[in-house]
Length: 58
Image (cartoon, rainbow, N blue to C red; front, side, top):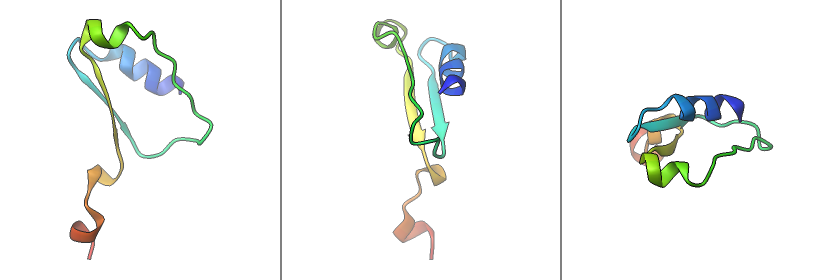
């Protein structure tokens, strides 16, 4: 969780933090709820580049 928090903190105003892959099932992230609307930052998850498995993997 600390790495994602650090990446989010380093993201510029209006930027996007992309969490790639899967962490531990016990990982938790902590953010001040006022940060998102006032900085317009986005947190997005991605696994396999958000591929469509039925189409992209034969």
